[in-house]
Image (cartoon, rainbow, N blue to C red):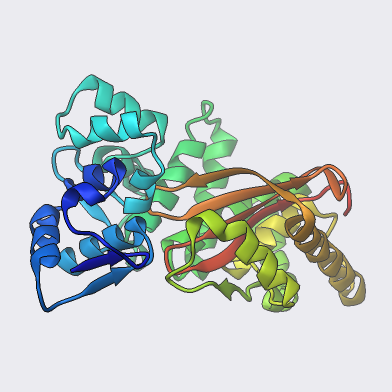
Length: 343
């Protein structure tokens, strides 16, 4: 027997059309659902159809990510769940037609060939064999793809290539994960843009100084809120606001991400500690106020199931915004905060 939100699902027709489309794409999913519904002794309970899909996928294959061998990609069920039903039905046809490719492109769903551009980027600087890149999940590969994509927006000058190489070297000295590599890579670039150092040694010295001076300042900026695995994707804004109302801290995913946002969005340079602490405190307070009292302007779901909410408020921070991410474990982090009209 299967219960969804305390409702007994007597047959496959009791589920929504969206649920059935996705379940058909889980290898062994339809068979297991029939078995479970017909079992007179075993009961399976889920709070929603989406939760049940995730449980079936994880239970049958040991991973929440669905492998689409015909499309050559991995995807979280939550991403599928949020697609319009017509587009979802196209993916469900399991045929590699041009129309399916158009759907994937429209929603930024990348196959393994596209994700390999991230590895190509590493290979271009001869760092693909570094230990940090030897075991990567989908989120890691998406992070590297994003770096590679940034570098394709315009033709790179000799200086651009030099700074990218230096950014790689700086990031590799400090990173423990590919996502942290991404943040440190962009941190070095941001330092170069902000301080306009002319030589390699001056740029490296400035970046190292920033890292050392900001390190202690950022100790309190990486605390995060966990909503738990059974958070409601449709009620995230309310849960996040409730966490802030309970004085729980929402911070960045790592120190490098915190420093990157401070460099990009505040006047902080290398001031004395009391002044620097005030700038950091005011910046984080502005972000918290924006999230607590702002409205969600847009919501999106990544291929890896990470939800991204963009907050804005013309009253609190005209022209400003804050991006909050919630992963599939319910971990809430600030991805970015633009509040230049305040700080």
